[in-house]
Amino acid sequence: SEYLQNCLNKLCELSGNMVIIGSSLADNDNHIFSRINNSEISKVYISALQKEEEHIQKKAEQIFPNKEICLFDAETISYEMPEEAEAN
Image (tube, rainbow, N blue to C red; front, side, top):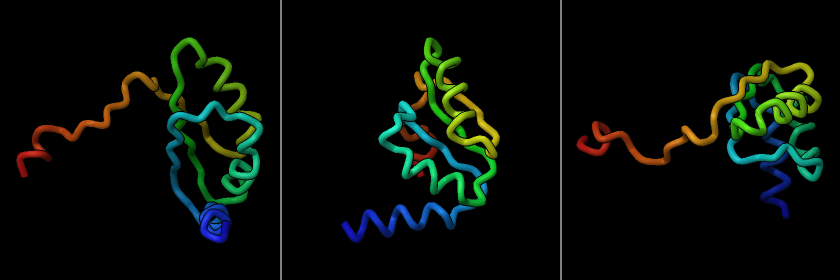
């Protein structure tokens, strides 16, 4: 679709850091990873289960050879608002 193509094109314009949550880094997303590689993003944070950490690290280094890769424990992600923010 035109909307998704626009989103894909915007990936090339990004800079700074990126967080990827819930991706297995599968080959079917290589078109997305290619755009990230062609961007000014310098650091990519990727969620991973501890048992898959070594595999994800190796895969991420192959996919993003010019980016700094930082893994974080996927089980520590919270989608709840902190209580302080909820009170305001």
